[in-house]
Length: 150
Ligand code: ZN
Image (cartoon, rainbow, N blue to C red):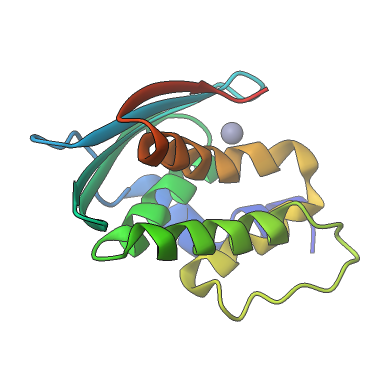
């Protein structure tokens, strides 16, 4: 498969065109801003957390199709999840995306996120796909923060 096939699958194009949970959350309990200067991706994540459960999430941002689709798909899997579950999921997602292209990986427990597995073949794009997640982790750690991916 060439870069176009791998990176711009139908589901990615759909989420890029019609991002889910797009906008700001009011009220919110946690928020973070993430920026990937390499590509120009910018994302803001808003969370409403009650106890250890993510009750609601929204995002705003501009950037490439990969970063926007990644943020959109991420928001669809977060609602109702416990923070620990979300951290585990990010760990698995991150492991797959940062593995070498010829390394065998298990995407069976990634759910909808498996669509981004092919991104690992294009290292420059990995930051686009992980930016929303790194920003989410920032939001979970601190209540309001700004992240710049190096
Ligand atoms: Zn990007």
